[in-house]
Amino acid sequence: MSLMFLCLSSFNFASLLTVGRLGVNELAGVSLGIMLANFLVLMPGFGVATTLDSFCYAAFTASEDKTQVGFHTRRGLITITILLIPTMAFFMYIDPLLIMMGQTPEVARICGQFLRIWMLGSWPQLAFDCLRRFILAQGAMQAGTWIMVMVMPIHMYNSYALVWSPTIGMGVIGAPIASAITYWLMFFSMVVYISCSKTRHAWGSFSLDCIHGITEFYRYAIPSALMMASSWAAYEIVTFCASLFGPVALSAQACIFNLMCLTYQIPSAIGSLAATRIGHSLGNGKHRRARYSSIIAIVLGYGFGICCSTALFVFRRSIGYIYTNDQDVVDMCSTLMPYFAAVQTYDGLNGLVDSLMRSLGKQDLSVYLSIPAFYIIGLPLGYFLGAGPPNMETVGLWIGLALGVTLYSLSQQIYVLFVVDWRQEVKICLERLAKAAPKKNTKTHPISSALQSSASLDSYGTIC
Image 1 (cartoon, rainbow, N blue to C red):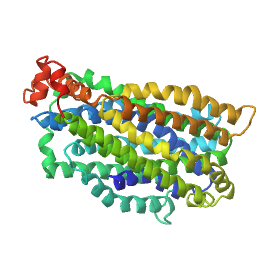
Image 2 (image 1 turned 120 degrees about the vertical axis):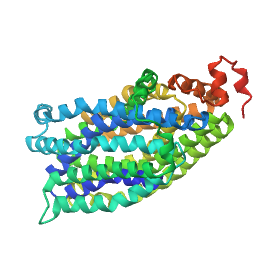
Image 3 (image 1 turned 180 degrees about the vertical axis):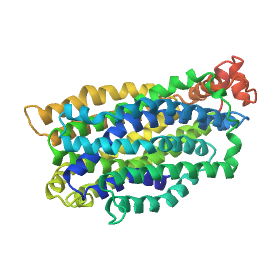
Image 4 (image 1 turned 180 degrees about the horizontal axis):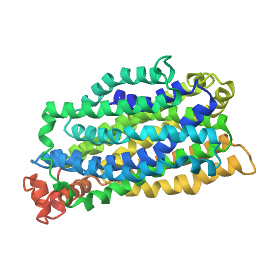
């Protein structure tokens, strides 16, 4: 799981790596394009896809009809398709808007060009994430990793050849073309795997029955998107504010942010795996197993985070050379790295605990916890330190961001470890599945059937 998450995040890493050698404007334009793609496409798209954590994992164990897993997955695919339509139209005319917001014409042109091509691969990227959760709910942990292992060398070669090759190299636009090719390969590979494996039996028919009762899905999809947006947007706002301090600050911030995305993946993979176990356990009525899974996941997250933060601090003066040879950008990366190293553990734990919260269907609570942490305390303080009288610029932005990340992480951990009533969560989970299930479905787990018959809460409190 960790290997698969690292491969997924390395695609943007490869784009920055190849484009960064073209020049500061090219690196700044692509960095801004990746930031906007994250903010306007991937953030809401992955937010909707993560809603499947609240349904698919528990549905696989709570019902004898395994096609409920495919039923919820089809809802996710329909939702992300609708979500992408307005964004594609917006990116067609984004260049003048960026200039109006203070970007240089050259950076705006490169950014717009990057985004219009990158959008060609946005749908298969999000669809792959939905299908990945579909097979993960059935315990197929390694399939996504093998697909990444096969696709990764192709992506690395394309990233170099389409940007730098003397024969087919196209400069900046080669990077998004390579990404689009990779995302379509991932999607088709996943479709082939599902078609040839036993996981296909949980897909069900290709009817539009999933539209019925979709409001229950949106009840969790909207908080899931907001949950991801509330934290992810904070990083993107810091990146945009850094761009106002010049191309060097934007390039350095983009390098740090890209490195943050890489280090975020292993704790996120631990959280995704723990969410699967929690969903399966709640569906089976085993509340103690669900609780222990959450505790073990958080302990593992702290272990990895401390090791990673130590390595980042030790090598802070040389990491910038991975992305660029520009000495000013490298020096800025070195200046920002201690702040990143200090907050990296809690940033990774945010990704881990977010998965646990989604498995419990508590996305709305995470949104409420993130608003004061980021938007009342962290970001206003960072903007004051960066653009206000202290005039600390990007360093000030990072101080505020670090405080927001830490507060958000600790508040979620306290809730999961000390507030959640795991016995009650079994009942809540089964009620959620009963409301979202297709009306024609009658093959349910005995516990779910009892719920639909208005059984008392005490009958679930004894499940262990």
